[in-house]
Length: 315
Image 1: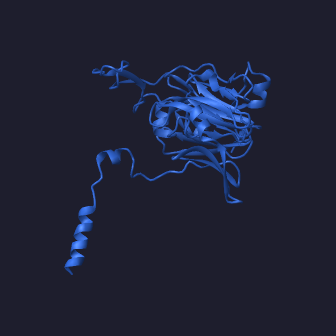
Image 2: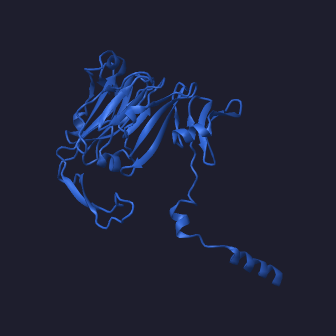
Image 3: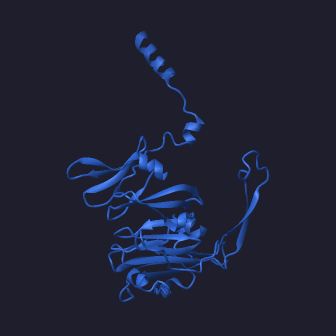
């Protein structure tokens, strides 16, 4: 009996309390999975202890190395995305957080066959960069304007030109939509086959500014920044103007044929949600049909539209 009691006491005293640092750094958090499906039977993934991109074949139960670790290190990326045609990876680097969900980064389009590299957007810091539905076409946001890159050899096409920092956002959410509505910085959606591109525009012109202090490090690394900076944020409050939102769709084949004069299909909100409405979300159902979720400002009435972008009819 005394032996059993001693063993229990020894086991209890051997346990150690975890530290605040271990908790804050997420050491005990649930581990995620980096896999992305690229077909019905294949997906790509990365491993934390092995810097490489792996491809797994579920039908054969085998894996193969798609991008070697030394190339990952050369591209300065940890979680690249494979293009739908399997010929390129989109490698983000120098990633910086903006708000809760949004980031900016520099992007490289890397050919997995001949290892040629293309710096997307002249190597500028982009707000968003995503692959299309097929091939390796890209859409990206820079300076609150949306651009389309048909392929690695093409010149980018400006879809919008009216973006204004902190005021007019094209293809990217403003702060309130990112924080309270969509929970993402992305407001650009390719159709399933990559023929169309839907994007939202948020106009914060009528939204009042909210000023707040932000404590940050000094630009000079050798001295501490002791005084906060004052930042202004367009922040809608009760009874004041919300951002004005509109949703448009562009036919990408027509855009490539006439890059200087893009034409748009306007996806108008239904009258039931009034003019002071909220865009809740966008999802492509197939190549030609898009599901759009609209709400009134009180968010006690919502409409889910199914719209055909060819006929521009919504049900």
